[in-house]
Image (tube, rainbow, N blue to C red):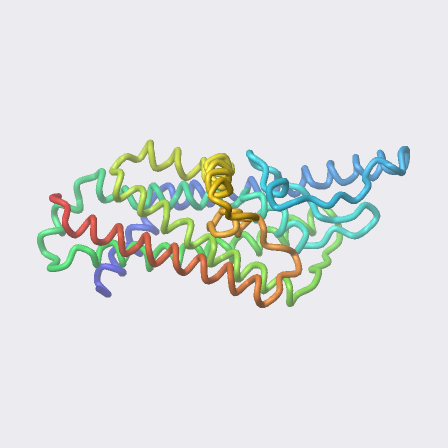
Length: 284
């Protein structure tokens, strides 16, 4: 098992896509931060001209999760934009997520598409270990990417805002930690889809659709069907990984984080076991 993990780690750091996606992510962080400055200044100017322009709205859970990718600062006009505000906007809007799921699909399919798996598959008694190895390496990738993003976000904040205010550190750490586990669960889901479907195009498309909240349409349909059976106030999106990523608040309570971590653990464990069983029985 340790040899499999070392092999996958070596393969991950040798992949060109690992560095290309990292570089594009770096550009995306600085671009997103620069655009947030522009948007904030525009809203501030409009508010000065029209004080009623931005009245506080209270949105339902369904309205909080919009189809598409929305990176919006939670900062009130007149307040200082903190690093936490930027982190929340990018993670809540799944801007960083889309880079991570693309790599997860490429990494999960790289040895399958190259035929390399055929050379080593017969040497391993339980081929399910190869999937577990990928899962371990993807966890390392998730943590590494989150650390990289956080550091670069701090740098970009200092460059574009000329000031550096972190925000509430306790809430920031709780938020990033919970989102890291949710992101890892999503990467495992993308890995499972790639292994089971054996189609890079289908897996990549599905992964991007997850980040664009397209699945909300399916969730809403299921909610309506369940409501017809007399179950009121059922909202499937609360029990999904992407739903929890969007619904996680900036001041998460221990209960809120606990539910998010539980859902991430259940989905992550479930899809990993499923993909390892499928791969173990498949003829390669």
